[in-house]
Image 1 (spheres, rainbow, N blue to C red):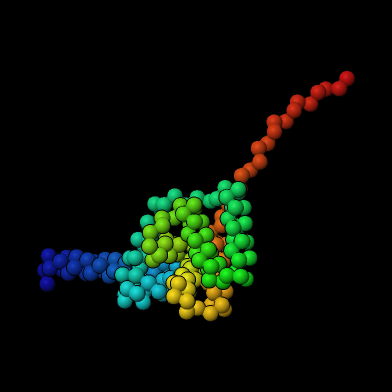
Image 2 (cartoon, rainbow, N blue to C red):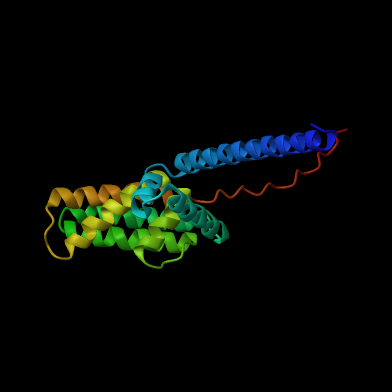
Amino acid sequence: MDTVSMQAWWVVGIVVVLALVALAAYFLYRKRQSGRLAERFGDEYDLAVREHGSRAKAEAELRQREARVGQLRIVPLAPGEGARFSSAWNRVQADFVDNPAGAVTQADQLVRELMQKRGYPMSDFEHRAADISVDHPAVVRNYRAAQAIHARTLSGEVETEELRKAVVHYRALFDELLEVSVEEPRRMPARPVEARS
């Protein structure tokens, strides 16, 4: 073997090693990304994988959700708004005794109003649920369950116990979304201390 062919083999060997290292780094990166998404989205991650039929497609969808919600201006409520929403929720719960189906409809409307006030876009349900899943993955399942019961309520096929569960599900989401800004009280400037003689 001459020196030129020896050097060529060395170059090929180095290129192969670098390619293997790059491939290993890529797979490690993908595994970490998958773990991050699974941890962040919880059950919603598994649902996305089932719906898309592939982990790669599901993860692409979840990253798109993150990017879309990252562009939104989600704001906390002013203290007065928070009190108004809390009072409205108390009325929903009180109305449940006399009109369970109506209370579920009121709860759905109140959650929608709260989402809109916070800055979530109010497109169709699946987009709302997807947007909620980014910042509130633990309760998006509740939202889906409540919405399914609410849809069946319109046809009159729902028992009171299911209606109660829907209100409980809406309440979990409502509590999670009811973020109120804390305004720091203004401090009065200190008065100068007068020297005593």
